[in-house]
Length: 59
Image (cartoon, rainbow, N blue to C red; front, side, top):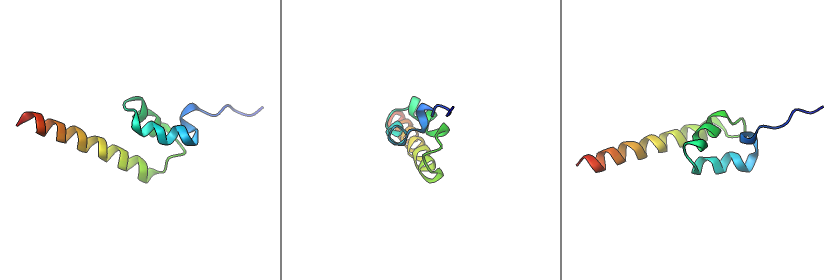
């Protein structure tokens, strides 16, 4: 019997998850399909958006 594939390891779902935080961040973190380079780019973009938002609204 073949093991059922996890929802976050689907190829298309894996890349669409990047667009839907916070569920998307969990899926990106757990996914075996998305390469480490794209995971790092996603995390950096989120950090940049958060820091930019903080700076924008604190001025």
